[in-house]
Structure formats: structure tokens, C-alpha cells
View 1 (cartoon, rainbow, N blue to C red):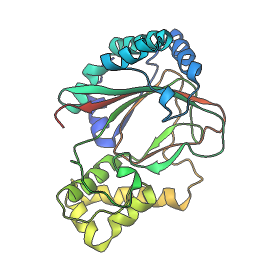
View 2 (tube, helix red, strand yellow):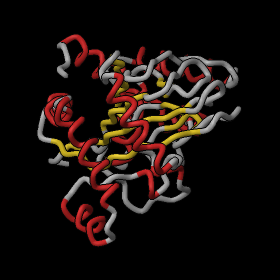
View 3 (spheres, rainbow, N blue to C red):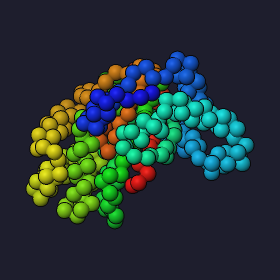
View 4 (cartoon, one colour):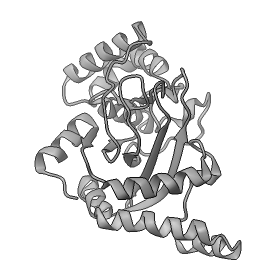
Length: 269
């Protein structure tokens, strides 16, 4: 798998990119079988797969040969699709796979995760050390079941990664004081504070970027039940996104959601 120059530009501009029909049907079925052995939800220990020698040795010590075999297959998929090289190209430098997991979500009428940004300290009330704004994860998110509006897709506000970068940059430089900004509601509130707005906008390419973001945020917050910025994807489709942007996991209201994720981080940060 390679990215066109136009796709790299879209990813840089919008913060996300969807590529269609990346996995073959046989690969989809094999990966689904692997994930459903655990039938783990997101964040559960069992949903993670070993990616380095230490992890493999632990599995070997526990005689967990099944997990080792499954992981080797998932790493083979990574190699076949050149994910390491694609990640390096996006980061414009050397990067490493830091996490590999697969999980399923049952049919339910609530969001998997509400609108949020991953690089926002999980909404903690107090943070002792502010990290560099250059720290973020690149996620390769393979859908193994159908997703669509209000049915399990990872909705994303275009260009929101630039907004959160500006916020985190101001925090890192101690130009503004930290307050929770993990949720979309808190982020908008934080940006609109009189002492924050101008300093944050100065970090952007144009003020229109902030205007567009706040307009999109207002639409979402005014009608949270609507499927703004949702999309449709089929099994085998791939979503690549910058996790510092504002996104959500929409409710899997029509069918269960099964997904495979590869997370990358730039080495020099």
C-alpha cells in the first residue's frame, strides 16, 4: 500500500484519510476470527497483541502459542501493507509501531466514545507536566464490519488536529493556563476564554481555521443526536488519522463493530 501525494496532503490538511478495499476477503475473515477469540472491548488487556521480543517471551512463558501465532499473522499484514514505511512518510521521519490491538463492540444505542481528543490528558483536572505538542499517535484503523452514520464509524472534525495542536503549543510554552479540554464541550469553552482565544489563533495558519472549527463544533453540540461528520465504510476499508484531532466512536446501532488498530509514534519525540 502506498499513499498518493494528494492523499498525504489531505491527511496533513484534514487530519484523516479513508482508503477503500485494502484488505482481501480472506484476510478480513482471518482477522475477525482472531479478534473474536478474545471478544474483547476497547482498552481491555486481552485486546492487545505482542509487538516486541519481551511481549513474545511473556506469551511463550505462559505457553500462549495461540496468541503468538495470531500476532505473527497480524504483523505479516502490517509488513505486506508497508505500514512502517507509510507511517514514516506521514511523519516525515522514522516512526515505530507502539501498540496493536483488535476489539469488538456489541450493538447498542450509545456512543462508543463521545467527541474528544486523545492528546488532552484524558480530561484530568490537574496536570503537572505538559507534553510537547508534537507528540501524537498515528492510527491505522481497519474496519472488519460495516460502519456508517450512527453505526460505529470513527467520526472526525476536519482540521481539528491543527486546533488542538495550537492549544497544546500554547500550554507547552506556558502562554495559557491548563484546564481540561478532552471533550469537545470543554475544548470549545477553553478556546473561547478571553485570555486564550487570541493566543491560540496566533498559532494557526489563518483565523478561518478557528472559525470553521467553532462553527462545526457548534453544529455538533447543538444537535448531538445527529450524525455530523460520519461516513460509511465496508469491511477491509482503512481509516488513517491523527489522534490529536477531535473525533468520536459513533454508536454501533445496526451491527456489531469489529476493528483492528495499529498505532505509530515518531521516534524523535
